[in-house]
Image (cartoon, rainbow, N blue to C red; front, side):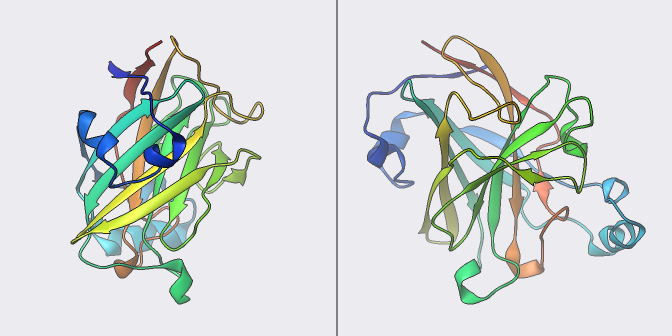
Length: 213
């Protein structure tokens, strides 16, 4: 169980991926795997998945905290190439934080009809994140939750902060509360090798979290 501790810091400081506040929060090491080709939604993408081979990003670090109103997720990983959506690039670097709407939601299938997954997404070059819900691979739909994102390059590494209010904005959004438990997963896309959609690296297992009061 990973305890997400409260911090006394302004939102502006927490949304600074290189800010000093993050150095005081312990990092969790994440092992990332290639999305299985068999989980792709069409015959074409199943074949394409087998041909692509392994995902580009194999590890990342994650830090989490909350300020009583919002949760903040800090991700960092190695990426030699900076691929931005604003360059007209169809394959920007990207990352997402996934949380299950039901504790048994399958992370490798992006949820199911019975237990959906809520994902908060960042794309390199975009100043605004977005929230989606998925009930299986290829079923993502937007939710009304505002997601704040910030990103910075540190040499050959990305540092990204993804943040959302604890409460959420509806039945398709994960509701969090101090003193409560949830689970979190991560997905990362490397734009320079054409990763997008279901072609990505991801954590095979959920990380259980508890928001400390």
